[in-house]
Length: 314
Image 1 (spheres, rainbow, N blue to C red):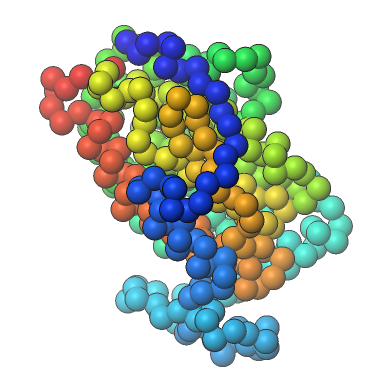
Image 2 (spheres, rainbow, N blue to C red):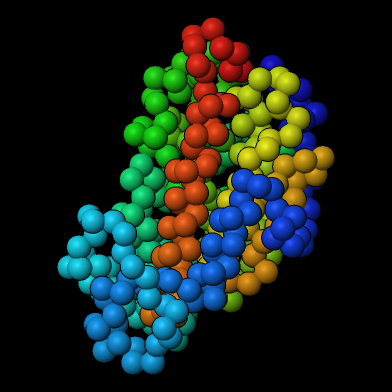
C-alpha cells in the first residue's frame, strides 16, 4: 500500500524560466512558444483560401504538411472548421453564452479536430465526473465536488495495452478500480494524459487553475499507487494542464516534488476569436498531444504497468 503521507502535498503557483523546466517538457514548451509567436502554424496548402478570408498574413505563419495522409481537400475542410470555431467565438463574445455552450460549440469542436491528427488520443467531456475520493489530498478543507474539470485527452487501447491495465486492476488491495484517478467508465481502462478546464470570457483563470491543481494532485496520487515503492516519493513526469478562458488557451504544467508546482501559462498561446488564433490553438494542442504519444505514454507503459504477472503494481 502507499504511504498516505505521500498523497497530501501543497500546490504552489511558481514562475520559472523555460530553461528551469524538467527535461521531459522543455522542448515542448519551446515549440509552443514558437506557435505563440506565429511560427509555422498554418498548412501552406490552405494559403490561397486562407488569404481570401484573412488578406493580411505573415510569411512565418505557413508550414509544410509532412503527412501524406493529409490531402489538400482535408486541410481545406479543416479550414472550414476553424472558420466555424472563430465565428462561434465571436458570436459568444458579442452575446454572452453559458459555459456549456462554449464547451459544445467551441472547445469540443476544436478538440475533435485536434484528435484527428493524433492516432490513439481521444477526447472526453468529464464535466460531471468525480475524483476518486481515496486519492484526493487531505491537506486542507477541499470541496472536491466543486473542483471538477471539463475535458481530458486520453490514451486509448492502441497506445496502452489493455491486458496490462487489467492486470493492474486485478490487484484489489488498494480498492482502486480505474487506471485513472476517477472511476468514470470511459477512462477506467484508458489513462488520462491531459486535463483541460474552461471558463467563459468573464471567468477567472485563477479559478480554473485551482480546479486543475486538485485534479493534477489527485492524478499524481494515482501514479504513486502504480509505481514501485522506491519511486513513489516524487513523480518525475510533469502533467500538462490547459485552461481555456473564452477563446484564450494557455498551457501549464504540474511538477511534483515536496510541493507540487504549477508553472507556465504566463500568456495564452492562441485565441479562437481570430482565424490565425484558431490555428495557433489547433497547432499548440497538437504539439502537446504529440508529446503525450512520444514522451508520456512510453514513460507510463514502462513505469506504471507491469512487465510480467509478478510485477509489483500496487
